[in-house]
Length: 235
Image (cartoon, rainbow, N blue to C red; front, side):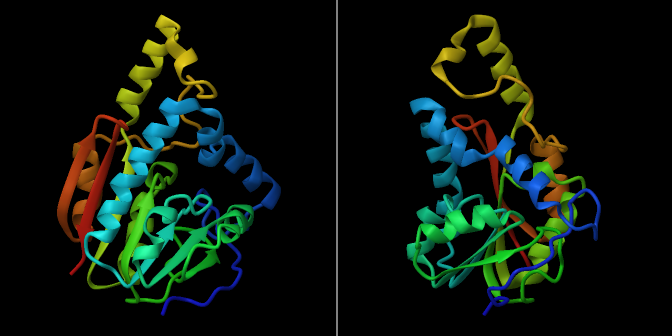
């Protein structure tokens, strides 16, 4: 059993131990609200996002987990693809508004925890079979802290499922869209660098980050989403 459903005072990813300003946090989430992007981005954006969700969900379900913790869960959109197939899903996010939207979906056997991905006390130690970190690590100045917290929450043999965008090809694609005026094909998508991304990953840098935390079972680049999916098995 993971930690009970209770509110927490979340620590800022930029300043460990500082309380999150709920107004500032809501504004930040609105800036890169993926649910909003899917709603306004047109068919191409929705297809790309659906592919990202499949990449993660397939890797979550592959090991037939009983307990999954989805850290940085957005509005529960990712969990929609796998929650019915696992015993319990714990959705974690800094933003209570995101968690409220997730609860409103009434997914089966889902609980929520308000807290920070880098908080080592956020989840009960050795209680989860899979921890999901999808589109999270690129937002953290010290992503290794989130991986350390994830590892401590896993049972022996558990897995961390990671997705990160490949920002360099994404930026190249955005420059191409701007130069060719093809941006009309992806309405609502900013052609500027992604807000909130403080780390940029290629395959080598992602492998270096993940390797200390267990056995790398998979690191794949998906050209359809311009991102990397990875699975780390902890000892």
